[in-house]
Structure formats: structure tokens, C-alpha cells
Image 1 (cartoon, one colour):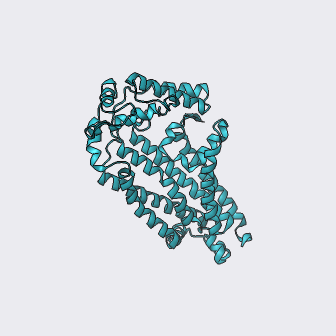
Image 2: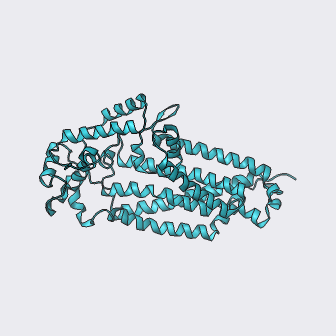
Length: 387
């Protein structure tokens, strides 16, 4: 009998099984509704919306002695604004404070006393150099970033970062949400046939081996990526319609002053999205592999969720002095899906020297492919034996 390829029919059937999973659909629905709540409170939670016009009065102004002098005239030595009419200096005050108050030598003294532009920029560079040392950078890595620092246009130009901060921090939260969505949606992709004892019959069919495996993988990936697109677009749509994207064209140093990369907040957002998409790809591949091996939906959910959060905890306790172990656990942790990745100056060599936000998406894709290939090896040899 001539074999007929029914891949797309199998793919449609496997996708339909995922969509009929009530737990997965409820999880997705809750997450989608939450995108609008998050779109509101990632911005509103940080400020009084009525104050936004005042904050934006300094947009486009250079952070130099003149602007810092105006801010100092409106604040006391501890950075407290002295009058309601001085709200326009809030962002300048926060930026200067973000630099000065990070330095331990200002722990018990007023950080805003005798401050000028030269001192602020000098303190910023001093803190960055301290960061290089704490992360155990090699001399070549330090030189890489020092060259990047020279290329930054200074002094920086102020823009209100209320919205841009909310967008980048809000997007980073979806790494945690995707762990739950993937665990609930993918856990039974391979387990269901074993639990229903239908896998010997299915595997004996003409398209029951390679085609079925690839159909299951593609269906799982489709569900995850479509769900991710839906919730992220929901978040972006709400923020854009309600708040606009004011401040996204600002340099990253306005929001994250110790960053050295020459990027705008839009570029930072794209880097976070690349990490989020490829992390979701890798975790889906891992979940499919675990479902394939365990043939148990509950066990798969527990391993995916427990493993992800376990790696998050491990990455926070491994000391930076253990450079290799610290960087590996950081890369494998969902915590890397964050704008704060720009503060990790450790480079990764993949043919050429790359930053973590450049290299990690490549690593995630390669690891995902490895798990998919390993899953096929296991599926083609052991499924029926395990029934």
C-alpha cells in the first residue's frame, strides 16, 4: 500500500486536542484578560496620571549643569522636591539620584549636596567600572565596554521614562506567565495517548511515527507562539491606546543609567522580545520532551514549573565569583528576560564576542532543536515499550 502523507491532517488534529484542553484554555483566557490590567497598572502604578504632562516638560533637554542646577534649586540636599510646581524636575531628580545614591559613600550623607554634571557622569563611570570587577570581567571584556562607553553621546538627553519603563518591565513579566501557559498547554501532548492506551494503535498507522511526532511538535509550538503573540499584542495595544509610547526613543541610559550599550528603549524592548520568544521556544521543546519521556501530564507540569523556578532561585544564589557557573545559571534562568540584562556586562563568544542579549536567543534556539531531536530519538524507539 502506497504511503500517503497526512501530516497537515495530523497537525490539525493535534492542535485541536490542545485547544480542547480546558485547563490550557482557562489559563490562556486569564492571561489575556490580565494583559489589559497589566497595561494599566505598569504605568499608573508608578505615578499619578495627572502628573504626566509636568514630567514631560523636560523632554529633549540635555542633562548638563544648567538642567541639574535647575533641579537642585527645586530640591533639598536629599532630593526632595520643595514645591508642587517643581514636578517637571522629577525625572531629572530621579536620574541623578539613581546614579549618586547607588554609591556606598553616599549612604549616610546627602547625595544631592554639591552635585554638578561632571560629578554625576564621573560617579556613573566609577560605578560601571566597579560592575566590571564584581562580574569578574576579563581585560578584553573591559576594553570592549570601554570602547562602547566612548561612543555614547554625552551629555544624555532627558525624556520621561514612565511609559518606557512600564513597557519594558511589563514585557519581562511574560517570561513567568509563559512558564505556566506552556506547562498547562503542552503537558499532555504525548502523555494523553499513553494514558488512554491508544498509542500502540496510533503508532502502527502509516503516518504514526515521524509524521505524528513532528505534527505534535508543530502543534505545540503553534499554540505557544500564537498565545504569546496574543497576550503581548494585547499588552502593547492597551499601552499604545491609553498611554502612547512616549519616551521609547530615549537612550537606555535615561532609564538604566549604568547601561553602556548604545540603544534606545525600543531596541531594548526588541531584545527582551527576542529573549521571550526564544525562551518560549526552548521551554516548549523541553516540555514536549518531558511529556514524551514521562507520559504523565501532571509530572510534566511539575517538572516544567519546578525546574524553571528552581533555576531562577539557583541563579540568584550562585556567587558571581564563580564566573562560569554563575553565567550559565543566569542564561538558563527566566530572570534573564528583563531589561536589566543590559547590566550584565559578561560577554559570550559565538564566533565573535556577543552580549548576553545577543547570544542567548541563539543558544535557546540551538538547545530547543537539540531537545526536539532527542525527543524524536526517544519517541521512535521507546513509546510502545513504555505502555
